Image (cartoon, rainbow, N blue to C red; front, top):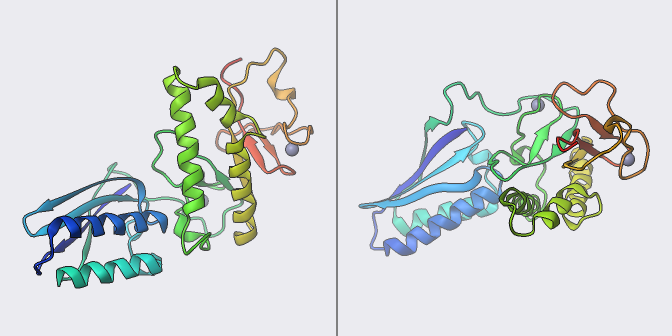
Length: 255
Ligand SMILES: [Zn+2]
Ligand SMILES: [Zn+2]
């Protein structure tokens, strides 16, 4: 991923802590517009300067053309309060050979998926298996992608509980692997809406850590009961895919 430096010099008498809070809000708006990843940026005051270092999927994720109305309004507000202009520059990459995310002209399909450590986009491209920046999709709700990001953090919270094992492990695992759980229902609704907006088939990734006595390959789709085993697993690592229920999954490692 790319690491950007978003900064401003303070050329006014504004209280720095107040401006720091406004800067924080700007970073929330960048997150909701899908331009930054993970909400784990460092932010600090350095003499007369406020600096934030967010992660982005593309070098140009913070380009004006990807800003929504909230980002633009907050940039204007901060620039007025500090009597100076915001500066944005790319300062590094997380991996030397990181080349960015999905660049497919048109994806065959999308997958809604994440995990407790991911700071990628919750949308994966079915053609190249890479992250799709949210701002490439039509705006989802209130000029941004809040409901998708809220499903993402719900999923990550469940995944963290099941990884930690001691509190709510069974409950959180079931949220992730049962098609009728609240978490799955929320995700499947999001997939439907993304498909409506983009006209690209959108699958929900159903986690699978179930115990099976019989051969897993014969396991029917948990939604419609039909066969959903991919004869040859697709190019990446998915073993099951149901085109009726729009869910995709893998063999359980727990058998
Ligand atoms: Zn792609
Ligand atoms: Zn099905």
